[in-house]
Image 1 (cartoon, rainbow, N blue to C red):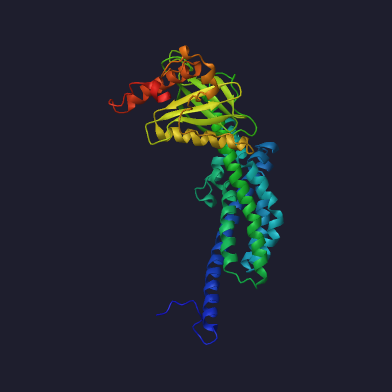
Image 2: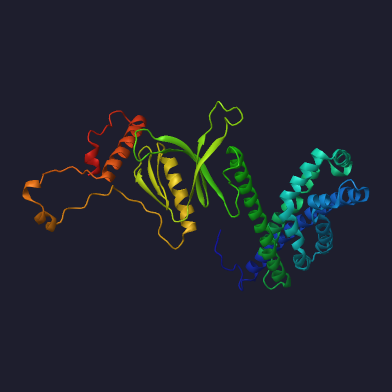
Length: 412
């Protein structure tokens, strides 16, 4: 049995004919499924427009702005899809979608309003007793088949994703010589733009929910989290190493696309705020740099140095994976704010003191020279204290045998 891609007949006609037949079978199967699902989709849209939009308008149970807030452009979408269904049932797939594409702005309007519509619907169900009772009666009709209004309102968003796959399959199994090929290809591009719009709206909505959640975690309204163009990235506990001192204090950090927010846990004695945080400082990521001081190898934890225009943070973690994740997140956020500058650095070892020049040796009196003179600069003393703090925390997690005897040697 041969699996050669070459022709099986004298002129290759049999092989080409078999390929065309396979395309046609796949195309027919996709077309049949598209028509069946479109029929069901139009029936469900008709339930919403007839039993909700039209009757609510006639009865006046909801005001016009409330109706538009909930149902948006679903009536116009139903009209567009009824015309599409006529073409699909007659086998004119390319022509049907080609005429539908100029009306996809109704879908854009709908997907832009979907989250607001869900919010308005929830508010009216809580406050409007007449509407709540009306909705329950309509959903009890046998035509709804136990479907809820909330599920039916999601259908246009879900249908766009279905259209995308149907059109891709139809275009892939249509000969380029077929007049419908260009029409289907244009429809794939147009529907894909709406699909991307849906995904962008979903990401923006999820980011908005995260910003609202963080805002609720913070005590009071002094620290504003919600801002235009701000994206939530991550959060977690890190130990802040002081420039002078012994103990590193744990703080909660919230990382956004444009700032790093430091907060502390509220006192458990405050009953209303015991599960919240008090915002301490907000560090802008513009003109910021991050580097690893410790934690380059597969050890337990490490130390990050984050330098801001007016401040500097030394952040420590005993979890190596968590430290690397923070480093990557900070580096990515800073890099997006400053794409033209090199702002992320990583040094493999501590900076060494510069060697004494020959001229300095000649200018220094011989009596004042001392062999193995220890560094006594303020920076070296601060770095020694930091290393002691890091070593103390590291030895708590690591083996008790690892205990450097001379931290000064490590710094030199």
